[in-house]
Length: 399
Image 1 (cartoon, rainbow, N blue to C red):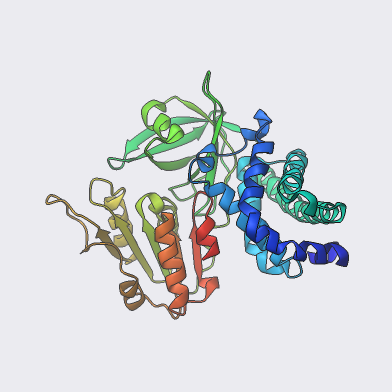
Image 2 (image 1 turned 90 degrees about the vertical axis):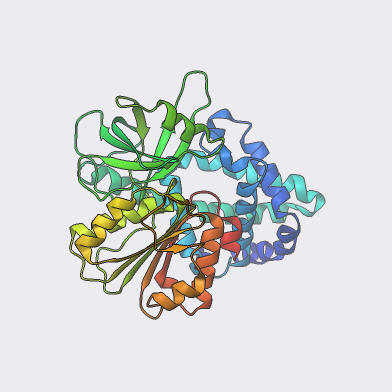
């Protein structure tokens, strides 16, 4: 990827690394201020990531800094580029959106760096931005074309209807979705997610990603949504998305997927609502009678918030999988769990085959930091640690 850039541009971008380290968040904050002046562009972003924590600003600052640091060795960012492309496809980011970001980013660099933002610096960052943008747009075109051409596939937003809903726990509800046109739906890979465009009268449109929580069946999808405290969209889904409600849905996306061919043991490790892609993976393994050993491990606060526990036990009976459920603070009436407290890292290392297993991990940021970094420190190869996190994984990626 670096060959597209001139040597002069590479040297100038590398020279801006100290400035990005010192003022990266200020630049990205200013970038979003500029970008969000346009209401249509603002609507492309999940505004819950732009609140008081500034998590998206930090995430973008880290990404820009990583790009600058690796401008000569961009191959090391390959997995990150794929993750970004998948997110863009889910959110329906199109080539016509890229100039808005270019203008906002370059304008922010000029605003924050002041006199240091010479014509040479601005020209170099303009070239660097479009080099990466072209790589992303090319990959995104492939993903869009693949979605459109596969049986049951589509482009853009397709109307789905809530056919049924099921309360899985005190905080998680599942929604069974069927296409409003009655046609088939594209097969999804276990672990992928759907993106929803939520449009309500008098309200700003919102986009959200939710993991598909069932194996592919060609007829519909299931998502299992946690009601988040103060969650605008999750609260609306829980309170208002009754059978018959129409939802606009983009095709399945995401690179956190279970491979079609497995030769190593599989550990499915989740915390809280992170179990949703794991259940899809588990169902897929059960449906295809996978010969690999399966270990399903889940952590929840207690039985009131633990979803799909009985279903997981049924899948374990079908597959011979081992199941371990941890309740951090179990109630007297709770049953169906193996241990009390949080999942200990040393227990995971001791009880699972770290020398050969593939680990699929999904959960809150602290959960991922603990196990993604912990397993690496325990000697598990990076290519055997797969994880999903919804939101800007700022300090997770930094770790």
